[in-house]
Amino acid sequence: MTNTIDADARRMYALLADGGLALARTNTGYGLVAMRSEAVRRIYALKGRAAEKPCVTVGTMAILDDVATGIDPDVRGWLSRAVAQWPMAVIARMNRRSALLSSWEPFVASQCTKADTIATFFGVGDLIARTATIAYGHGELIVGSSANLAGTGNNYTLDSVPDEIRSAVDMELDYGIAPFTSDRKLASTILDVTREVFQREGCAFAEVEASWREFVANGRAPAKQAA
Image (cartoon, rainbow, N blue to C red):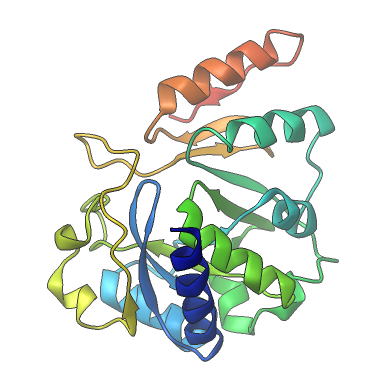
């Protein structure tokens, strides 16, 4: 399986670097993955997504260390443990000196940041994580959004993705059902570390919140769930 993942990741990276759009599984459902401006535009058009809603950047801890700034070292330590167990997205201050962020085309940069912050998505699964690592080795980033029509919730199997999305991508890879699912079709939990607030309840939220509260019990102000 490792050889298959590596081969698929290399094929995906080559496609994305050439401006293509891929459909692949994350740990919380299938997602649309891109690198270049035209592919990001296609994400918004296919989903019917509002332009003011940013895409996420596929994250690893190495990527987070480059693209984000101002994260408390203790919080970073908790994050490194948490994202290894549960699917999460992390909103942090954007590092304007980031070498990786400077690789973005202007449109990609405008759609993947908001108010001087960037959202990095962990829990993307082995395939997309491997593809992101390959891109990182080339000094670049992968971005994306869930493969669903806006407001309809995550799709946990490839067959659940609307046909109009599947037929419009340049590559799709079927990696089975997502490991984390919910009757409510939830995505990942989002933690805004700039305010230490849970921005969104997602799959495994109870576990993430319990772990965070255990962490903050050592003296930090606890995170709140956003209203």
